[in-house]
Image 1 (cartoon, helix red, strand yellow):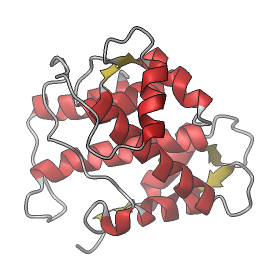
Image 2: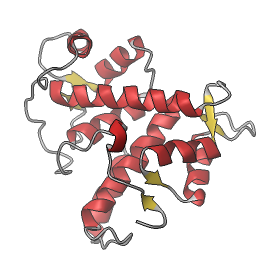
Image 3: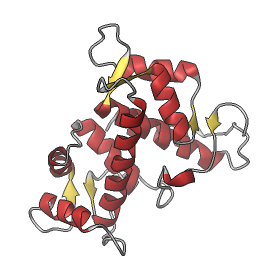
Image 4: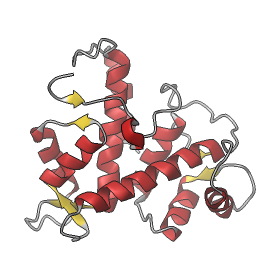
Length: 209
């Protein structure tokens, strides 16, 4: 479609895994799951290292610790946003199937961040963020990119750039809100109608993670 929004199907060129299912009740109980066939043994080992009590589920702090050990250091808020995106609940626990998708997605985002961090500063600026989001199928208006950089520039030193952790959070917000919008924009017209309740349920999970 022309204009801002979504520039193509998610997952085009293998860049973006599609959502596993529609968003549901944010307070639903997470259903048991298992690893998809052919899961990388390293991913299985990573999950088992996090699941120290052998419950088959990993909570938010366990996930944060294990990701840090794999050079994917992220804040607890970002971890909770990740869990919400892949479990479609607010339970703050994740099973093997969801963990596999999350781990794969983080690998993609790490590669994207490094590709667009052209000066190898460990940060990306507004134009680089816009290009990174575009490479993942999101045609984000410049004013929105500017808002994201302003929000996630943690140092406020005038560099107007964001680090990897905050880049992940930007991707989560853009991806999550865009997918929620697409559920309503069935004609891909760039317009959608929400009830007050559905609007609040769309936005609040990104604010209270």
